[in-house]
Image 1 (cartoon, helix red, strand yellow):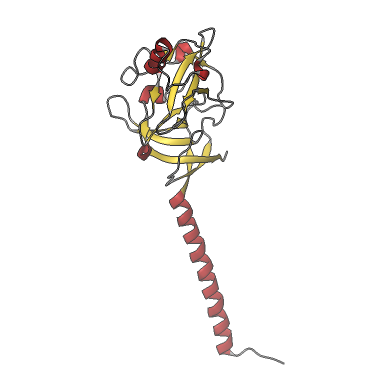
Image 2 (cartoon, rainbow, N blue to C red; image 1 turned 180 degrees about the horizontal axis):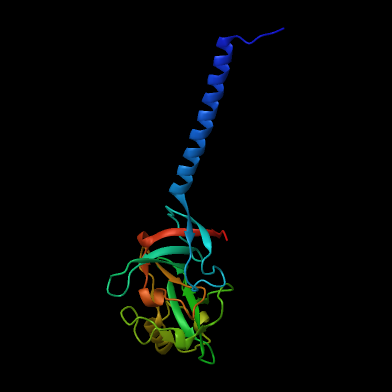
Length: 221
């Protein structure tokens, strides 16, 4: 009959304890690293329907150095008086150097977004399959602190074919210039997917990347 000596038994137990300790330390480090880079963020409000609904949770990335058009972000803003800092969740529509135009549809009830991306010289309509419903003109409510009365351009079917570097057509050029929103360097322009109830860059203006706290990766539940 074989017997395990006391010394060998102690060695085995120490080895098992050491392995267990390593596993626990690894798990703790993994959790710490995860929550350093990521977070579970609760969403409040209806401004991102039908993409994200009130009371849902999202997996969000901290330390997000790269923000692209179409990204959903959580950004810190304040009211017009600079008080009441709070977080809002919105979709990035324009980034540094982009030009945006809000233009009436043919019947003037709805408004569409057009973009001239940084480095390009033509506007194109932003493809937005994610919005809950078309933007209604009556719900635009641009903040006069950031935008003047010409910010919504009257309908012009030739906008997308017009070269913005060509100022020969002075009437069209002047209307485009008056309505164009240029995104400053290091800033983003953001809108809610539920445009008709959202308070976004139409109210807060553009905001610097430093105010973006998270980039939403997915909806958890």
